[in-house]
Length: 474
Image (cartoon, rainbow, N blue to C red):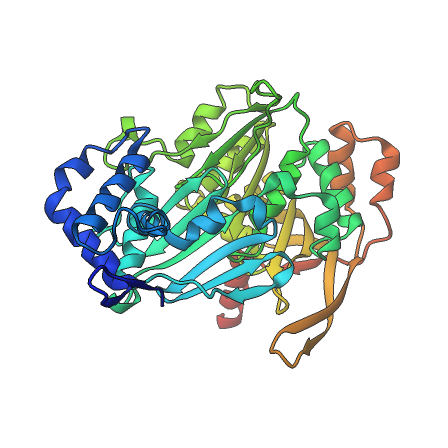
């Protein structure tokens, strides 16, 4: 713990100084501090208040050499974001940092690309300090967290998202539990994805060709599986001639805007952040409504970044109008993604399951399933083609590419090395061949992805199961 000498020669630790100065400013400078909000010189004025307080309290003298150092540290802990500023304000110094997880006020874990994990030596000073810092972060976006709203998702910047809990959702002594996720699309390249064992060159070529020739796709997986990273990279390859409409909820994770050195926009991107208001239809700009608005903007590519509810129905409707749709979704595996989409569609439509399943398969013929394995590397585990859904027969689909795990080797330090490989399993179906050809793909390209196919596996529909049960009972 940092120690400082007081004028009275008594030693106080840093936390005690912080608490003392905070109380002094609250009691004596509350009105002055409240007027700093929105001022361009707020930081300088706040540091001056901190410095005066240290001197008035007799903790430091104006002539002390290190007074400016302790003023900067106190200011960062009181009005800033404490040790997090080291990372979040200087991302260029930590190019492979992907996530900061706050499991408790005194337990902070750093996640780096390639699966490396490090428990931070720096933590917050107390449960209350972690909560104060979180509130400082949220205040920049005019948001707050309190007992009435103890959970929040927000953006720190366009490429940094924070999700956090406080009491009563977590124990009071934890202070804050939070996840800070960092996306760096400008640093994502095909080389880094392939070198990092996230995807193979064959798979990447196939996905980029699908995007080029207007095939809508859905990237599925659990939270933290790399869906957004993959989506960011794929969308970064879209021609600037195409008009893209990203629709995001809560915070911005997609960074698609490209500017020249004069600040002029080089591509056609309409970045939308929803503003839901279920109590007032006129003021309710949720994902579904923004998709409907987008149809009037002559959009080439819709990106409802995550399908969570009834917007899944509007997304597939957009795909059926001829627009491209690229989205992410939480699901357990590639094949069950279609059932997941159908379940979400039911929130906005009273059509039967068979009809909604058929619409989902037609809208998203390609499913990309991703997962973070034991070595913490996020990988494309399967690329699935949904051929069709037939009432009474079920879903007809087959795997185009997959990642095969050969072994998991546990090391002495507790980490795991995954041994495996990517492979092409089957070729595209005649139906998909026609789709690519109709969308303008050269025949030689279509032939590249065509080979003798195995028998597609078939998942029985709810209707078929019911018929079998009824026949058995009869």
